[in-house]
Image (cartoon, rainbow, N blue to C red; front, side, top):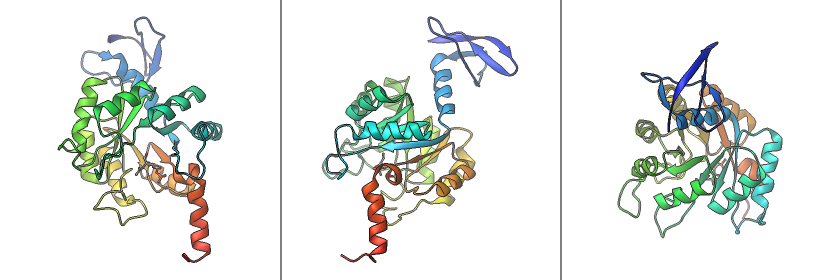
Length: 272
Ligand SMILES: CC(=O)N[C@H](C=O)[C@@H](O)[C@H](O)[C@H](O)COP(=O)(O)O
């Protein structure tokens, strides 16, 4: 749906959207001032997501698993001042959406045999994430092959065509993948998969140097976020200093058994 710029005041653009409430935001006016409503709405949501995003994920194998655990995690995150939630599976996204009033980055982890790509690997998975209520769809945008015999990032075009209202969060593992994702027109890029690919699996901490370069080169085209292996508030602040719009934290906040294990392992000197 298209709409027009109605009024400009104090550098802020006010826009009228047919049959909907007015929205106000810092909007890029392209060419003749004609814009797509979803662009303005997307920008408004993305701008609001500046700060801490908490990844709230739990699987039945986790020692903390209960049916409503992700809801409690999301409520705790909102209570603490988080600006967004990252969640896995249509069921958990739905439950979180009912309980908290924060934008959700949704994904659907699907393991298909020995395939390496598992974060929202198909268009069907992306549709389910969207239908569950997530505003943003996170997907693997690495250069790895999928079961369908194409590169993971090739799904971006399908999602943009089939679900144009959705924002796309590209999970990548290195600078080249980040650059490609930005060129493909995703909304958010994060090095979520650094440490989880064949080439990076030996790393247990983030590559801050690569992240700084991503922020410097791509930060004006996409929203750069940090995600993965951020364990302390100080590390998160460092990411903001390097140019991150937001920092997504999971395990350190929502997997207390792993935090306990970090302490136990170190204190016991990694005795078996
Ligand atoms: C690689 C993978 O599957 N990452 C997942 C992506 O959604 C989650 O399991 C992570 O918890 C999330 O990325 C946050 O990272 P960390 O838990 O390190 O703060």
